[in-house]
Length: 515
Image (cartoon, rainbow, N blue to C red; front, side, top):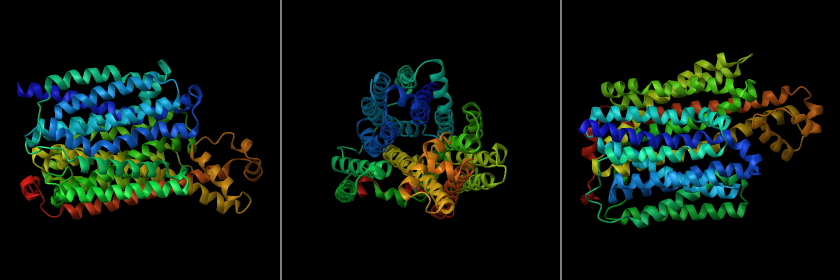
């Protein structure tokens, strides 16, 4: 009976995670459609994407502590209902501003739903081996949502309309609710007698401010940028003070003394440092640099995403045999090697999908080796009472890193293009025009650039220089991604230390009474 109930619960949690991933990766496909149908500006399109990410990162830790206090099942049911309703609002939105508002609401619900899903699984599966199998399934289904999102979104638009990219989540949310209601066992932190409102509000304001700066900072006036930075910094300082004086803080900093937990957080950061942000830009490389059509690009992306879905069982065996202190750094090491291989393949003369294939496969294997051991270890390193907090820190590390690096990779891509064009053209094109040109080139659509810029038509009639600039920009992105993850792999290995284990980690965590 317990096995049957756990299977039902796992199905509901996996469906919820599938919804979250689909909503991140399927929406970019419909942005050109929204530009025409809703008369959305470029800034509107940015906000349609960024509103979801900003909202997600704002609520993660607050959701973990609320779930610990009021019950993880109850909060997960509530957030899944909210996600379905917000998806309905997105599909019915008649204008870009209303869609942005609906996307923000959807992000609030989605981030909360994902945090609850990790906490629920951690408590539902108490046995270490069964928990490992559950997180393998969760990793695979989450990967399907993120990896196949672009193809699913394109398929929906081809058969129906852009609205159904959002509306499809309504019946899926209802289905997830049925499984969650039937299978998930209610759980809460028996020590959480009251909410840490000061910690929740100050951290939420700080995360919102910093996320807003990361995603929108380039568009803000200097005065606004200084104001937002100051407000976010003050909120973060207030959060640190609130957690220091709270008798039962929502963010227990003592968990970072647990070496397996801190080492696994490096895995959570490393995965979202490069792999997931790059999935937004890799289609641009295949279409803009290599010249493949959308169908071929979608097929080539499978080499990047399929290994992620196939590797979790192997990853869990590695974790069980060698512990997370080997499995997580090894996964990040493999991921970093994959990006270095992509950098080498993209720089070869006559670069093609074949020269990129080894790197994309290795990167996919690396992310697959990292994901489930990371999640298993962060939640398994603390007592079950604090599963909500641990999952909140884990998911926060992932999504905040994702938001940062989506913006960083975009800036690196643009700056790499600017650098190449500046060296090639010299002073023939002024700085402002060069920047605007680089932003257009970074979008990957190189057709029509010469018609839009008479200077460019004279300087680069064949488009070879612009193409080389785009290649250079992607070289910067791949090098940054590879070197960064390799460094995080080393840092994680050092933090784990020799012989660190979950049981040793749990014993070193302080209890609420000791806080």
